Length: 412
Ligand code: NIG
Ligand code: FE
Image (cartoon, rainbow, N blue to C red; front, top):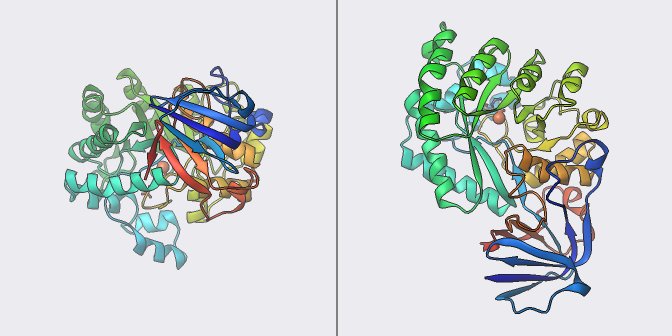
């Protein structure tokens, strides 16, 4: 099957396959080809270049992209989109002035979602989750990471991970699974956190790894949740079973989570709303991708990750949605990109790099997606006719996407 995109106004994020992420000043460069063509053969990007060099071939489908941009789909490296029910009553508490922690302390928060999930059948959980997955694909997401962490019992954590596995099998979008047993301490272990950490280490991790249900291991490393010591024990146990660390740190407190992540060679450290200078120093010369979640900052009215300071210090940065029922009930990467520009002072080039190639790296998919590169999956966004790519973040809240393709197939 050959699909030829012709007369593309601008082909964005054109990269050599040696580029696995971009950092510092290079984040402000977005290589493009104006007046371009792109050829997809059997779901893979097989050729592209300037329209004047377009090969004279017979294609099964020709798409005229006059006035439109073509770019790789968004790579959302941090979501919790498998969950049950919603928490909009907590939203009202929040409007009335309660903080995320105060809501959690009065029985809301992660434990509220865990209770709902434990009472939901696996089939029902799949049905609820697939609606959200289809929604975000239509919004231009073409690779995604999904976490467990609303089960908090062996049985329910496995249930969540099996739902993620089913989504992987049934959808063309690449999905990575992360085991987040250490998302909150369940009520039964309220006075025995060590008992819950032991359960994660001794029972959950071995079973998750043995069943091949996750690639990554995550911990909510935060005051009132899991300490540095808990985090290190869990990452150590996960690594022994082949699970790569990818962790929640510095959402409310900077107390050494970034250092723990780098020490265990985490693929990414995510949130980073609270950053000390030493956290930025630690991330320099590491292979760990910092990931910002501006939808969470927006929704909870907490500080934004200091992207400017981090990029100016030479770091890379990825952007993700954190799609979850408590701190970011939206999986819209377009909104995340706009918010990064508006609130975090990232340029459109930086935001697009952060949401594509850097996001791909943050979930180990940099060889498959995240750029226009020969050999990568033809997971593509075709925009509506727009004046420039800066219009995508500028026109916040209104979609500039005309069509989304996964492996060259149009998603309807
Ligand atoms: O990434 N911070 C921890 N976990 C999620 C929120 C989970 C929830 O509130 O349900 C997050 O923001
Ligand atoms: Fe999260």
